Image 1 (cartoon, protein in one colour):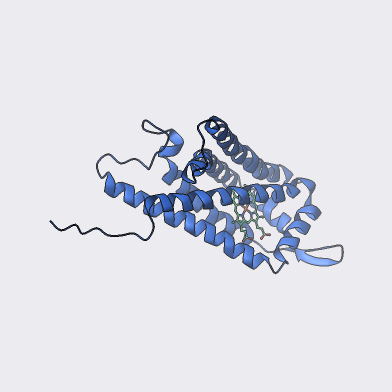
Image 2 (spheres, helix red, strand yellow; image 1 turned 180 degrees about the vertical axis):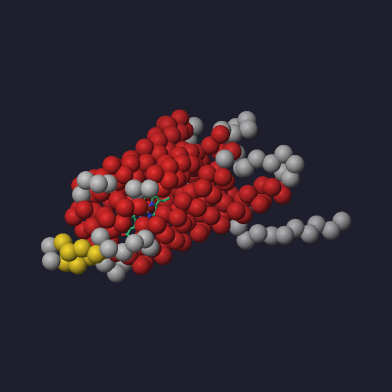
Length: 224
Ligand code: HEM
């Protein structure tokens, strides 16, 4: 009997660990991006100065490359795991679920909420980072008026609806992904799991409420 098996360089556990580690680092990015974006609430000078400080720093290229690497590794591992699971269970296919009997809504929809987040990311970067370029002078320094671009972008109610739907998807994704990452990395102890799961749900809620508040705030600034 011949036993021909295709060997993957990474075990399923290894892929989950990479997905967990990159996922947690991306959650860290979300927190820093949110904190930075909160300068929007302080007005044009604060937001433009913050963005200028970031984009004029030569280390930004390194940070952007690292961020891209995180996103790509996370997505690649997700695709590989979904394919592996489909092959293992071609008939009754669910995602790799760790939360017991059938899994939760969030665990079962991980691939779909992930795809929505990816589509969001592409549209988000095209709309703002590569959006309309205005310039302004603050404290004698000429810089991009990203505040104007952002406020203008969110005058379109369609953009706001799209952002809120995307943030709900990303919130659901992170509400499962956060605690699941702890499990994949072997950091879960039965004693602490309920607390980690609660923190995960709160993180998802923070993503939905925190990130949705920004477009709504921008919309309300229009015409003022
Ligand atoms: C919903 C409220 C959000 C607002 C108002 C916002 C705002 C911005 C702005 C203004 C930029 C351009 C920065 C610049 O070029 O100076 C940017 C870039 C970016 N945003 Fe957001 N963002 C939001 C949510 C998100 C979310 C939820 C994610 C992740 C899923 C995200 C990921 C990124 C990435 C990866 C970049 C490019 C960073 C770079 O290349 O340096 N953003 N965002």
